[in-house]
Image (cartoon, rainbow, N blue to C red; front, side, top):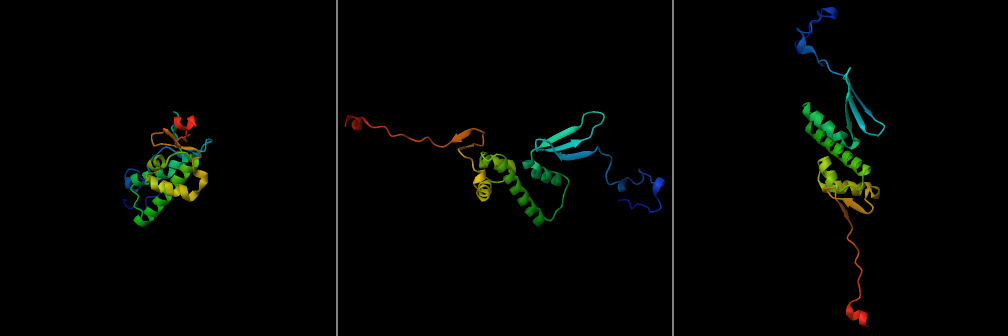
Length: 161
């Protein structure tokens, strides 16, 4: 910062001369709220044109926040950053499991940036409520079902008896 001069107050402020002191340059207003579909909506004013809107699933909020902080050059202490990232990842995994427990561990792992073993551990910790009842989708969104049961038919020898 240029060291704002205490004598330069009120109407005497020269925006060009003190450009280094400006903390936030002009920017359109941004609002963040939960929409009726329980998703996060991020909206930027663009009057007189239509507002720009981003709709984000709550399960992706932590990943977006981490990316924004990284892009902004956040210099958090590495230990605290690691703890926070671990907590954020776990919250993202839990949210994904609660949103659709039939999704595979691999699909959730890819979304949350963790291993499928980590997803399996969280799935086991939060209990049976997040287990798929009959089948789970594969990473390619195909459905896998349990192996079909086999019925033993009598052999021709058994049928003759």
